[in-house]
Image 1: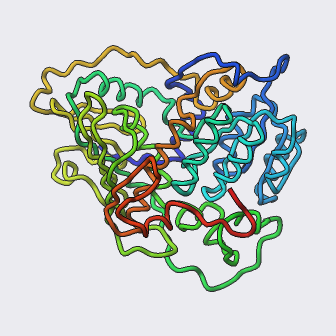
Image 2: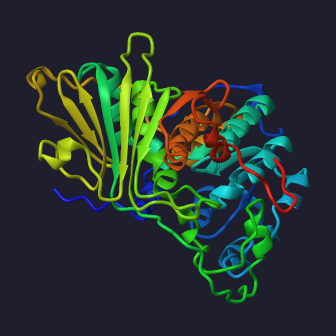
Length: 430
């Protein structure tokens, strides 16, 4: 069966689906002010993915909108005329009448906006990946823990029914112990190389200096924005940075994966400016209690695992393959398939035990208002983001990393440090 699933199609579906996994709980630390019916929300980035997020929180009180491109913000401003508009998110954080912030900026400003909001005492929903670099992701997660704010990363598929049916099968041991996982994405490609040499004028209404934020200065060019920024290391993480948190989320959840101990990557020759057309990354995870060690391999571009190449596994466009001792399990966003194995005849599907979600954005909203812990809070999403971004670090460093997660350091590869910790420019700091 051919599979041409796109992120855009998923987002259209997820806006109406709203099923998934929800852990509810009460916490005095997450209470909204007494007597307030709606959460007062500021949305940072209101076009593209920002528009999708805005649509999903529109039932609350939208009191502030922020976007560096005034033309792209026109429609949002028309829809929410009562919301004050900003081109710089920093003054937004000073407002005492804002309870929560949605961050839907490019990756290179995720950390600055999210940290500013957390430190101002506001709850935060931030798009994936949580940050552009490993260090930023760690700092954001630690700050969320210190401030005790309600957080959620925008891995919307986590709230859909198919993922939790897969997680139930794996956690119940129905396919046997899993030591091998393959994750591939084939219908997304963010690639860049040399910077363009021409310097067209900055479009009217675009505050390009604010868009650059902490990134090193370069002249404006439409090769960078909107959307195409993902292909440039200064702004994003390529296809792995874009889609890794969505697909690697499934094995992390199902197998209780923590931090990897080694990361090794191969791809085309490294370009100092732009992200690669294809990549293979091998992550090694230690045993977790009774669960055995796991090797997880990521592929994007035209690369696929051997099981797909030799026809043992259907060639779905993007998918996750769990290789169990009894049988294998193949899954994508919307479906899953148990594959034949030596003991497949004994496969028994467990009864569902993971509750449905009230919706990915709704989890966050209700926890902000009434207390609780959304499923992709930054304590979960931070390590997931680190894991994903370490694949890019290994690729750019050109060596297999021996990873010390506690120290946030590749112990055998000092040159990796340049890709782990960002250097902020233009007066911006963390």
